[in-house]
Length: 412
Image 1: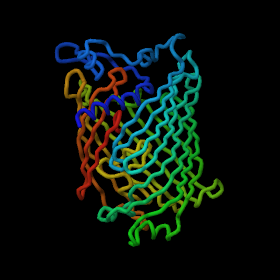
Image 2 (image 1 turned 90 degrees about the vertical axis):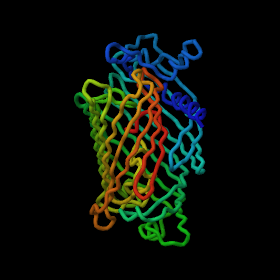
Image 3 (image 1 turned 135 degrees about the vertical axis):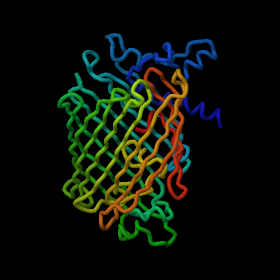
C-alpha cells in the first residue's frame, strides 16, 4: 500500500502542476539560519543524483516575458479517493493560458476531469477560470455530468439515526458566473445556475422513506434553473494553500423560476467565509477557519437540490460524514483547522481539525441538533514553488461515522 500512495502522490501532482501560477518562497527560516524548502522532486533528485524538473511555467510567472508560452496543455492520469466514491480512476486534461500575454492579466485555466469509480459512478467535470485583459473580468464555470448512484439518509436532524438507502440518478450541472472587479479584492458578478436530475430512483426495500414522502412518490426528474447575483472578496494569492492574513468571502443569491424552466419556484442564499491566521505570528503555521451556510426559501426545492453535507463547490464540507449525510431546507457549518510543519524543510506537515454542522427541521425550519466531527491528516509537499501538498485526512463523526479524504491542496 505504501508504494501505491507514492504513485498516487505523483499522479495527483500532475493533475495540478500546470494549473498553478503562484510562486512561493523557496527558503524558510530555521532557528538560526535559512533552511532550504524541499518537495518530493527534490528528494527524488537527491536519490537519483540528477535534477528532476517537469516544467518551469510556475517559475516564470508573474514576471513573464514575451518568450513565455501562452498555452500549455497536459493530458494526465487521475486517481482519487473518498467515502462516497471509494477509489476513482480516470483522466485529466488541463489547459493553462494567457488571454493577454502582456500587462497584468492573470493566467486562465480550464480543467476537464473524467473518472469512473468503484461504486460504478461516472463523473465528468469541466471547471474554468478565465481572466480578460488586465483582469477586467473573471469568468468562472463549473459544468458537470454525473451518473451518480449514492446514498441518502433522510431529512432533518433525525437522519442521524436512520439507515441510508441507495439512490440512483443522472445529473447535469451548468454554473457560469461573470465577475467584475469593483475595488481591491472585491468583485460583483451575475450568473446562471442549472441543476437537472433525471432517471431518479431510490432503492428503499419497500420502506417508506423521507424521499418518498417529500416527493410524494413522483420525482423521476427535476430541473432548477435561474439567475444569480454574486459578491466576492478574495485576498488569497495561493488558492491551493492560502497564507496567513488572507480572507475569502462569497455571497450568492439564486432565483429559480418556472419562467426560466424550473420545476418549481424557490430561492437560495449561499454564504461561504474563510479566514487564515498565522499562528504563532512568527511561524508559517496557519489556523484556518471556515463557515459554510446554505439557505432555501420562497418555495420547495426538489429533494436532490436541498442543502446537504458535502455538496459545496469543492465537495469537501463536513469531513467526518459521507456526502449527503444530512439534508434539509437549511444547513449551517463551522470548521477550524490548524496546519503545521513537521520537518523544518516543510517536506512533511500535518493538520488537526474539527467541525460541527446542523440542518433545520424540514417543516418548522428550526435547528434542533448539531453534529460534531474531528480528525487529523498528513501533508506531503508536492511542489515547493506553488506550496501545494498531497493531503490525506481521516475524520470521525458521531454514531461511528468516519471518512477518509485524499486530495491535492488544502480542503479549504
